[in-house]
Length: 108
Image (cartoon, one colour):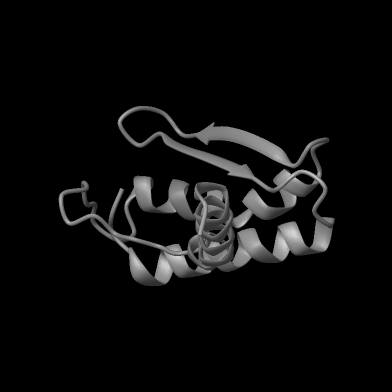
């Protein structure tokens, strides 16, 4: 089997399995934490609640924003694959936000 065949097989496998891991959530134990129901928590929930609709409202499906004042300022960024359907983009981001809030409830 030639090098080009091995490369083609490797790239095919990488692309196939790469898509599976796109929406995975990993909470890093060394990340910062915060107390629930604080100003930071409320800002985080507020910016995440509108992320999907703000991304799909933009040309190119890219959006970044921040809310609040230091030390409770929260930044959010959303991006969808160019050429994706608006509903698919919105659904994917909404699911990501839901998983983030469930799996990493008090992590920055």
